Image (tube, rainbow, N blue to C red; front, side, top):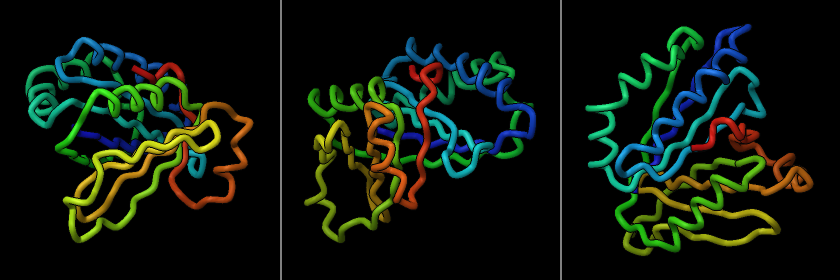
Length: 180
């Protein structure tokens, strides 16, 4: 599985337009190997949009980038709404149906998501593809390869916001329109 993190610094006065154009990416649901996508506004920087997309394999993702990405991007009209874009990719070689189902739960049911990067263990063989746990009404997912592990924690409703309020990690409120 491959996870793509996209961070856009949106121009002043263009948040609504960026939000509107981000909805155009719903075309991803028709792309082979696409699992899902979520995103929202960074709670620490209101002009920073964070988007996470999940792909079955690196080959599926690369095929999308070669064949469909540019057309969707141009048609979205999004390119003039932000100053900068930063993309990171995380790859995990093991994926099963249970992990995929928990990932869909994270994408569909999360009100907010906390993102953290942990140092990778020296022996990557002991690193599980995902460590899925229920934390209150949260789902915790861990994946990645050296040199760091990506940790996504999603909260199902805003009643648990206090759980995220004391942490210094990347956090965003999920925009329902951006879920694919």
